[in-house]
Structure formats: structure tokens, C-alpha cells
View 1 (spheres, rainbow over the protein chains, first blue to last red):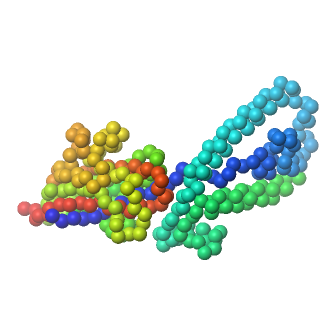
View 2: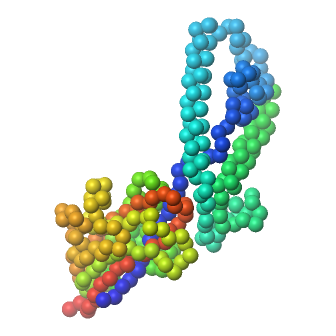
View 3: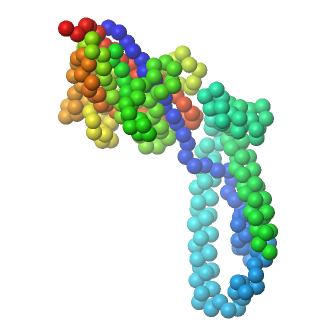
Amino acid sequence: MAVASYDLKITLSEGLKAGRPITSEERGKLFGRPDLASGQASAPRLNLPQDTEEPEDLIAPSSRERLVALREKAEALSARAEKRIDKIAEECAGIDYYFDPDRHPDLAAAVSAVFPGVNSKITFDMYKRALRLDSEIMLAITEEQTSGLV
Amino acid sequence: MIKLYFFDEATRTMEEVSGGTFQKPIVVRAVPNGTRGMHKLYVANLDTTKVYTGIGLSISAQQSLTYVQSSSISCKMLSGDAEPTEAEWLAASDTGTLLESPLDGGVNTNRRKLPDLSAGRNNYYPLWVSVLASAPLRPGDYLYTVDVTYTESQAS
């Protein structure tokens, strides 16, 4: 009786996870949305041409009420999503991802470029830092892009 | 030589599964505590001079490699062309249990059976591998082998 063995690779991945929830202020910085706590926009408004900006007093009360209600529902939904992400983050806090740099050279190069000296694993803390860095880069790009609209 | 194959959707061809090099492995993707990962395989004998009988297939973890091994991964095999139902997977035997030739299709005798492989028939006999992972497991690659036992003889 002879035996021949063939390769079977089981690749386990994890679901979507993220670091701590984004605060209302941070959300404002990222997306220019009003901070509900203060009622003030926490990010600079785009300096759009005057003829495209509708004065607030021209919005009918009913429309404003609907907008407020819509915004409140969106905020509630966002809060629920943030809680869920927070829970996932807690469950994944101890997970480290190890990989073979010889088999994944692109990933190894990318990791070592951001985290010098590391080329074979991604810890949860590294993942959170990468998320934060990604947000900062996106914010910088957005600010750079929007400044050209004046 | 009796070999395992998978169908490459990109090239629309049957690709031979590598043995030991992991250059062309069977790849099954799964999420711990998630849904079952499945992959369809084929076993074939394209050799016109050999006959294979007493074929058995089993799955085992690669002990010689440094990758994390875990008993939280359940591997099962079922013969047949159609994708097995979850009920069929639940009733099938777990890792280490041989699928004997003719493959009995687990506990479901309605599934297609695998005959002995005569010389150069150029037929690909389908079977399925499933993976179910339980947390906590680190994400990454877990290396296993599908071991094929057989008795080889010359074609008459």
C-alpha cells in the first residue's frame, strides 16, 4: 500500500475589526460634519462660491425638522455601529497575525516600511496604529484637495 | 500515478495539486466561528499503464512545519459532484477518517461513489473538502495534507 500526499492550505481570516470608536469631534475633522454636542461644525467649512450656498433661513421648517430627524437617526445608527466595532475590537485584542515573509514578500515589505524591524507579524496594536495612520493620511489628503476649491 | 486536481477558474483547466512544495495547494478559506469553507477536488489516474485499487483519502496536519496546529479546525471530505448540504457535512466523519474506495460519500449513500481507477480513463472523480474553524485561532495559513493511499498495479 503506497501513500501520496497533496498540499492543503487552510487560510483563516478574521472579520472586520477596528480600534476605538471614532469620537464625534474626530468624525467632524474627518468628514466636516457638525459636532452634535456643541452644535458647531468642528472642521472648517468649504469656501464654496456664494451662489451655490443656500442660506439657512431659506430652508422651510419642515425640511429642517426632517433633516434633524434624519441626522439623529444617522447618529444613532453610527453609535450602534461603533459599539459593535468596539466589541469586535475587544474580542480581537489578543490576536496576532503571523506570516511567512518569504511567502508574502509584499506584505513583509509593507509592514517593515511602517514598523521598522518587523516583517513577519501584525499585532492588534499595530493594526490600530495603521488604522489611525490611515485616517490621518486621508484627512491630510482631503484637506489638501479641498483647499483647491477656493 | 493517481493524483489530485482542482479546477482553475482563471485558466479553465484542471491543475495538479502540488505535493510537499505548497506551490499549488488546495486552498480552503474560512473564518473562525464563521461559515464552513469548502473546496471541490478531483482525483484521477491519467497513466495509461497503471491501475489503482484500494484507494483511500484522509486529511492530516503537517507536523513537520512550524505553523500553528490546532484541534479547533475540523476537516471533512465527501465524494460526489454536487456541493454537499450542511446536513450532509454535519453527518460526515471528521479529520482522519478515511474515505475508502469506492468513496462511500460519508453517511449519505446517495452521493456518487468513486470506483477503482483503471488505466488512462481520463476521468476526474469529484469530491469535496470542508473546513470549519472555531475561535480562538490566529489568522494565517494552516498547512495540512490530503493523503492518498492506494495499491498500484500494471494495466493488463
